[in-house]
Each structure stands twice: as structure tokens, then as C-alpha cells.
Image (cartoon, rainbow, N blue to C red; front, side, top):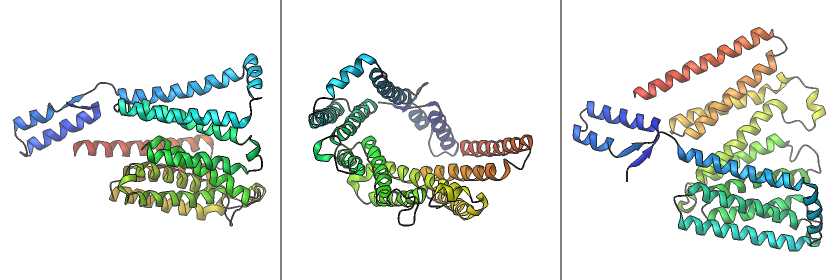
Length: 346
């Protein structure tokens, strides 16, 4: 079966084959065989499938919300609520287990339908969260703190994600861990801003660094290697977003204390972010890691433009302000275009 590639990939392969032929690394017959080994598709149907399933899920959730808003259904739900929460938790847990089971069987039967199979797992994730909500209303769990009801489904996601080899479920597990860290540390801090001397952005900077470390550790476990990139993505997401928030809010213990400082006083966090983003870009280029490189570039620009808005919005004339902004984006665009052209030539 011929390999299916999009137009950009097809152009790259064709240019590569032409270059090999010009350098006499392959002859004309071999070049023709290579060109006939792939088919260029005019439309990326896989991308359409991904977007379609996510839109379908979003529409499903929206339809549930709209149905709940209906007066008749509100009355119906109020009667259902009379059912003991323990029974509702059990029923929803069985539904979640059934969805995961159905997803596994469907994946075995239709392994090529990766997107729709993961969509089935998503509904399992959703119903598992609903189960935790029902569990929180049972007599047994009335005095449990909120973080436990986040931790329980998160543990399930961790186990299911590994056992079913589902990256989607694993991503929700990492999101759940982040929510648990937020609620648990806030509880232990007794609703103060600081926990162990760290406010929320600093906590998540440390948490993101730990997730990145975990992604490195996964490289040494062949069975878990399929989770490495997703874990690295979430670690970078937590780390750089939290670091960016630190450049705005610093590590202050209250909003009132932060409101009395000047933004220039937070220059240390901005310098730290600049150094870390430049390090990420250098590491990504040196080790050919596009994910780390992309995060470094995106958050370097975000940091620079954030400082630009903070320091010059009130001092520059708005016409000059936006003219400089336009010029900077023009330079970035021109430079990116030049790099892209060089990449095509090579």
C-alpha cells in the first residue's frame, strides 16, 4: 500500500528525491520507484476527523447543558435527584467502565479509527468525573475535602491511561494532577496565597518542572515510552504558563500587596524567563526537539510583548505604539519566511 502524504510532505519528498538524483545517489529508475511509493492527498482528512470529533463532543456537552435548562427537564431531574447519591455513583461508574470496555473492543476491531476510538475514551473520562461528583454527595464522603474528589478520578485516569495505552486519558490524568495540586495546597495553606512560601504561579512552576522530569524518566521505560511526549507537553505547558504569570504577579502573598508595586520591580522574573526560554530554544535546536523549541520561541515572544505592553502602553503615543508593534511582527514574519525558504532549498 502506498504511503499517504499531504501536499507539503509530498513537495518535501519530491525535492529530496530530485536532490538525491542530481547528486547521483540514486538513478532514474530508483527515483521513479520512490516517487510511486507515496500518494499526495489533496485534503487532510485526518485533521478534519479530529476536529469533527472534538466539535461533536463539544456539541454533545452543550446539548446536555441546554436540555438541563429546560423547565420540564429540571422538574424531571429534581425527581431523579431523589435517588440516593450512592446509587447514582454506582450507575455512572458502571457506565464509565462500559465506555472504556467498549472503546477497547472497538479499537481491537477498528484499529485504524484512532480518532473515534479516543473519542469513546473521552466519554469514559467524562462519566468518571460525574461519578466523583455523585460520590461527593454520599453520606460516606460528606466530610471529605474537595481535593479527594479530584484525586480519585485522577488515579483512575492514570491507571486506565497506562493499561489502555490511551494518550488522551493520560492527558486528563495530568490535568487532574494539576487540579489536585491546586486544591490540596490551597487547603493546606488555609486559603492563604502562600504555601511553603510559594504563591500559585510559583507552585505550578515547580510542578511543571517535576512533570518535565517525569517525562525524561519515561524514556527509560519502554512500556511507558508512548506517554513521554504527552507528558513533556503538559510539563512545558504548566511550567512556562506559570513562569509567565510570575513575570506579571511575582511571588506576592496577596493581590493587595501586588497592587502596590511597580511592574519594574518584577524584572528578576522576566530575566529568568528570558534565560529559560532561550535555553529551551537552544536545547530544542541542538537536540532536534521541535516541541521544546516551539515552547521556547512562543513564550520568549510572549514575555517580550508582555513587557512591551507593560512599560510602553501608557508612555508612548498609541500611533507610535502600534507602529512599533507592526514593525516587529513584520520583521518576525520576514525572518520566519526566510528560514522557511532556506529549509525548502536544503
